[in-house]
Length: 489
Ligand SMILES: [Zn+2]
Ligand SMILES: [Zn+2]
Image (cartoon, rainbow, N blue to C red; front, side):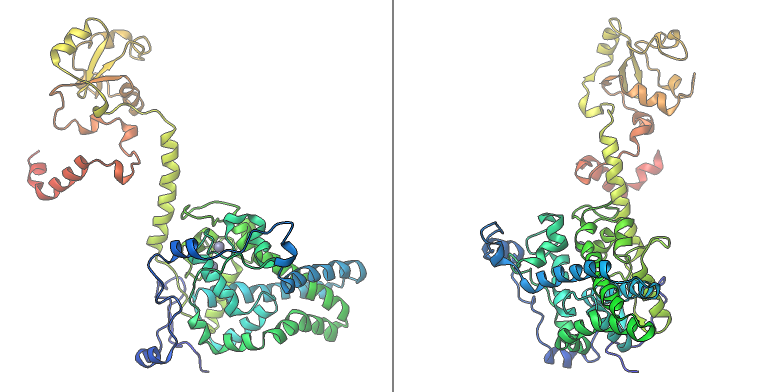
């Protein structure tokens, strides 16, 4: 069995690691000379901004021009198919064999798109043997969504220019535009450049492109009519249910990847763009519902990374791998995946953090001399703890240990008493105390007080790198250079 890809044994999927997207040609020098250049090899550095600014756009769709702007062939396919399905539902008897076959054929043709067009050809997330490629090319033709080459070219532009005007189905233009609108009218501008020279070289992709019209007729309507017709005599049911009704479902199921998957759910890996993760989308799209993960790690053969999440496309690829039909299943390093998750978790925690009121830190407080502290303590109840001066007027009567224990320390340093000398206060008490800060004692900061000067709730505070002032950076550097000082302490 020959293959366009090397048939070297690859590690099992769970052990597979990230590998570069292109399977290296057997003779790189020879093939570099023979192959056409990738179309995006010489694009300018400012390609995106330049194109958005200078490329002409077709006028917006309006009541005056919509009939001139329609793509009539697509409109016909996407309206006649559901009409046939509805007509069939009212005029044709349901037979359970045909119903079962329709569901089965829905999965076959759906997988042609998800496992074939999408994960194999558009993203090269694994390698497929020739028989598997032919199967996926045929199954994908039955979904009637354009040839592999056309589909993958648009999808690569979608990933590269997500949410911009160079994304052919940008979710920024609304749910219905990204679901179906973008196909019904002429594209308002050319999709951003995306190279598909690897697909132009693929024999099976070329074969499918050449025979595409015959393949969609055969796989979209011919086969689903003939199988129920020949095996249980239900030609009519085959045509309307396994053909038209099944195709309507496959269409809208895969369209949901562009609409629903950019609209419904969470962003557990990154929230820079619109892709989302949601189980409902996964059920609607044969497992393409973990789209936030997918846009972050597009060359990963999985969409769902947890075993219990619904991703039949991943299961199908793994089954093909076990059967020796697929190899080189790519996964992103788990360490990098978890970084994305952690970043989003920290982001959410940061939002919680920002809703709370925090104690003023030393930069926001006036520096008070010991004499001034003494003098002001005569007028209001001021207590010194860990270098900070606290005004406890509103708390003195609330103190669980009694008023007298606070009054005793007015104008004095209560650090030792507070931190275990008299009572080892709880973290909550320390947090509360810090809210009463009114000043910082001049020369009052002593070595070894670091963990006492920072209230417990602020020790794991989430800070942006820009908020970590130069003092932090310098002290880090000093630690690295002058480790000696730490040892002396
Ligand atoms: Zn997307
Ligand atoms: Zn994709």
